[in-house]
Length: 317
Image (tube, rainbow, N blue to C red; front, side, top):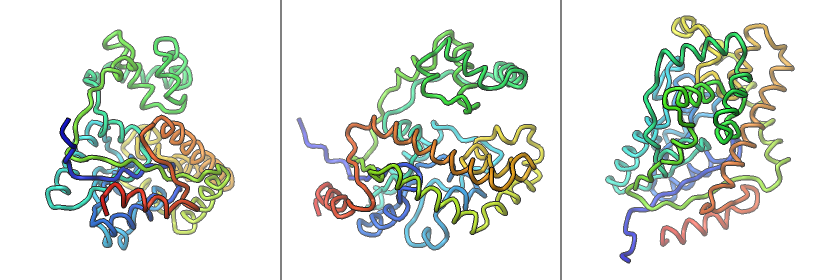
């Protein structure tokens, strides 16, 4: 068997607030690399403070890709991400640089590294029917319906995730086949790079919880609520019938901030719910990461020397 001579790349994964941004910047500067964001919130313009988007100084240090691709009232699919990310990786290696894939969106990583199954196209009529059903009965009721027709998908999809519930039921009604079966048909696409997968995550869950709480409070201190006020004031957002169903506003923190500014939550409850939602996101991310059997895990507090040694060995430096 011939040796794999593809150029090398790093995939830096981890739950939210684990320190991926700082580590990715350091690796990119050390290796002569560029960062490809693998984060479903960072693709949206205007989601800066609450999404912990790299700031202007950080973007000036290292070139970033796949930030600010869509307005917050628009959508962006995993398939679009896979295509855009593959193009970015190809461009980076063509210029002799090292791609650093950094983020915590498992669906995006799977779409890029494993490929997506040939899903049926969206059907506006079925989507409208499902939206009407949800308006009457609520998304948890549709999630229960999903559990009847596709238990595997229902176990992966949270009862408060309307976009994925809607898509899973849409696929079943269109084809009579559960979306989990379609996803099992995914074919692996061969990227033009060989990838070292690294997971950055505190070994102690309580440490991660404290980091999440501290970061949320720091976001509030830096104007997170003002950021959401600006989003709410956009005419295009005002034209959206159900802004809380937009992918951008479903990002953790943004939904709770939107509800607070709508008068539905007091400031204290908003903070508590925002932190809780972020912890739940981290829990889901860790569950996905444990399935990445070829990834190597590192605690950001104690293992950075070991992480750097693993990178050096992989890069041959």
